[in-house]
Image 1 (cartoon, rainbow, N blue to C red):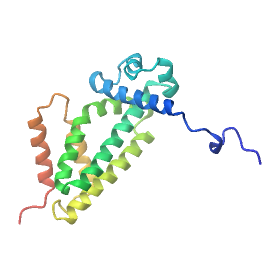
Image 2 (cartoon, rainbow, N blue to C red):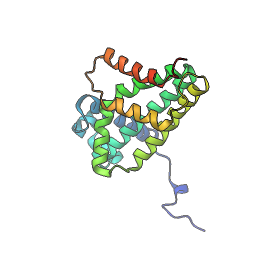
Image 3 (cartoon, one colour):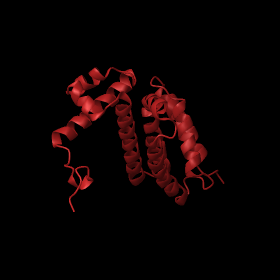
Image 4 (cartoon, rainbow, N blue to C red):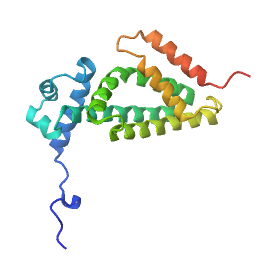
Length: 196
């Protein structure tokens, strides 16, 4: 039986230079979204990435598609960082370091999330994907902390996720690092088992 031209098994893998261009565009977008917000001119994104605007649009048909890709890759990095922290630090200290990572990226992610929400709604698949990956990683740290007696047994992933979300919503790019550190310590201390 002949295969269709749209059969996935007949599609060629993207060329290496196309993959590199896409990655450079996403990296440039993340940099500029962080400094200038998600409304930055796409021509600037293309220029920063070292590609033409046509190359940008071949990879991302709209601003929203680029914002979604940047949002997704930033979250993937946070999730990977969380798993690395879980493997290298005591669980309570891994949680402290993870919260620092969330706060470091909170403001720019908030702006990107608003763009995606306006275009695709609150139930956009990217939000579901990000939520599942993030909660899986948080669950790994929480379970290790509970098993080691370093985190309370009466909290769950949903509660910790909401605490992280609430803390992230209060943060801004010009926060005093000492204040951020103090807030993180208060949250994590509240997640430790009460002293006997």
